[in-house]
Image 1 (tube, one colour):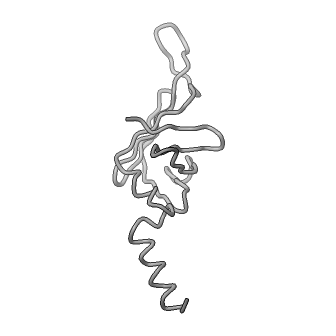
Image 2 (cartoon, one colour):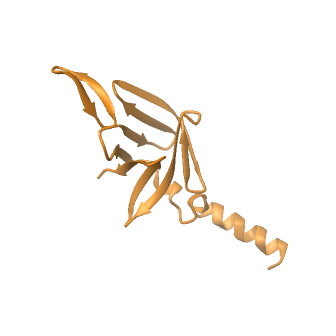
Image 3 (spheres, helix red, strand yellow):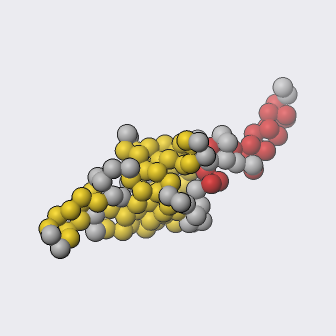
Length: 113
């Protein structure tokens, strides 16, 4: 393949969902995820209770909810890797039978809905 053709193919890959190889990154905006396990804790009426973490994506921002905290910030995705909040939350982006999954060093967040 000629260098000119390689550049054209690379540009087309980026334009049509190349960030995740098969457009996984393009599918993130508008999705919500919940940790598979209760990995945080909140203060409830009975004292400390286990809770799930949540990650939500809109077109420009991500919301990471853990314990009694919600962090909001920009997100980016490339090469099947998601990073948000200046790298404080990073995870691999997977497709499991059409359902997106975030894998953060073995902690899995499953797409809701």
